Image 1: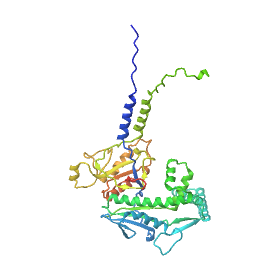
Image 2 (image 1 turned 90 degrees about the horizontal axis):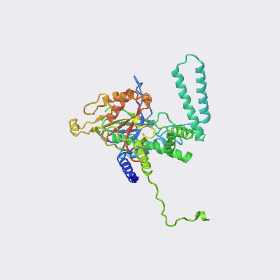
Image 3 (image 1 turned 90 degrees about the vertical axis):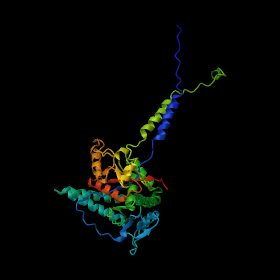
Length: 252
Length: 171
């Protein structure tokens, strides 16, 4: 019997089938990212101490009522887009020099030698504590935190390259007060505006200092945790524009 | 120069072998199948997220499975929504003792979060303070409920909270 050759199967259309599958998956899967405002809420405290008294000038108060009307530092706002400008003004007003009659938070200017002395003080304190026995760990931890804080500040100061490092009053904060019936839409709108203010302030500073932007720096830090230059830059921006947010739990 | 002389001038160019093309395409296919995520659960409430901008993207530095999502909106089931008189309810996933209708009040959040946290394999376990809870709420949802959820989470020290929005991009 003559040897018959087995005919080859034409696999040319195999690619078409695979493409079809590929396109099906491309179309049906969603690539939407999870976008959100990340916030840390305060930890639970048993018997919280009475809140300290804060000067009105240190509070950047944004209130929204159950009819979704806005009050920014006591003034009615018809357009919520104006909030970010208000916050920027709040943090910028006294940055070049304190105007005591203004209703904005005061600044202090830390100088190099001053930071070095403070750093030395904390280091000496830790050394003294470590040599004394029976030291409570809690106090020691607290001192370590203080040391890290001052070291951060010292690094930031050196990176800033000027003889004075402006710092806003520690009590200055953005306070978001809503009512129970305020819509989530307005609530997130306020957060958008706060975030925009933070971004604008830090972006402009980053542009001035290194001709880059805050977004790029924070992205670099996110993608490469070992990038010390970007980390220090981010730390400096955070010290220069230290924007605290307090969200008040609504009572009515 | 006889080496370079064309042997046969009327011979056609050989056809390109395309038998490995399917392999390439399959590789692409598998890449997309692995890299994309699909929704894990269908929420039992209607959520129409509000717009926001300048947000944090939760995906790049956190695996999606490491973030706990909870949904706040009106029930998807129309009859149920009417029976509840337009009240807002929560949709939670993987509840240990689930409700029949899959709708929950804010009181269930604490137990849900704790169960999720305890059921994680120990290799994936992180400190509860850094495990993000992402609240996906409807744009008309009352903020009071958001704060109720926050209070539940605060009680168990799950202090990383994220408010989800639809990002408008960089405007």
